[in-house]
Length: 268
Image (cartoon, rainbow, N blue to C red; front, side, top):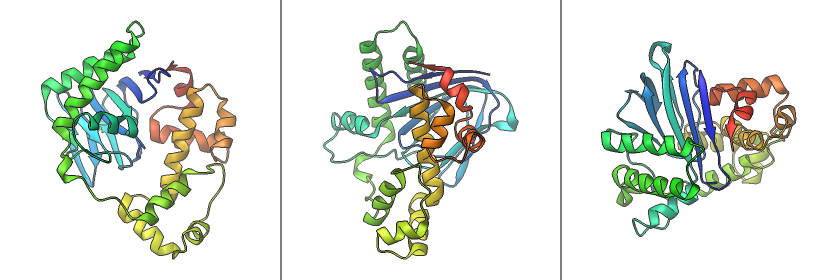
């Protein structure tokens, strides 16, 4: 298996990944970014929003922020794929160039079957991952492609209502002090809420428990530290993992790469 990552400080709003001939299995997870993926070779079972579909070359997978999903190869065969993660605030800026809106408009579909857009996406990903392409060209190609995807994949008039204030506040609390082991009771007391009511409401809104949500936040923070070259053992501790083994197990389950692989293969 060959993997290639890109997180360029000159393009801080995008992270790219290409995995070739991968058999790695992903645990159900989520991202705090807007995610767009495509299969280059092979087929995957794409699970999202309580359904599973087969995805192959020619279509794009569209994943809204904080949406549980996973993509694993059919019959554990090898597959090659691209994945792009985009900052939500940057996406809102792009969307405001298209529509008069106040907040980010989520995808209205989980996939786009558009060969022209698929080909454009793959080309842009190849250019973003290339070392000999100027930053300005990369950004222009990215904006043009993302605009086309938003136009085809979003319905601004169908924008969903914001989740309740309690859940928003709880999400904020879960993202803070990741090195600490917070209890559900302490979180509920902060919100003056019944802990079990809060747990039920949170899971109904997000499809995930507060503990699992916090684990995803820890992985996101760990990825940031590893991209910056931070020591793996130190990263595990500051992100709230019991030890390096605990960190390794959860990191690989959610990224299909070990912390070491992610750290040393990252392109800056």
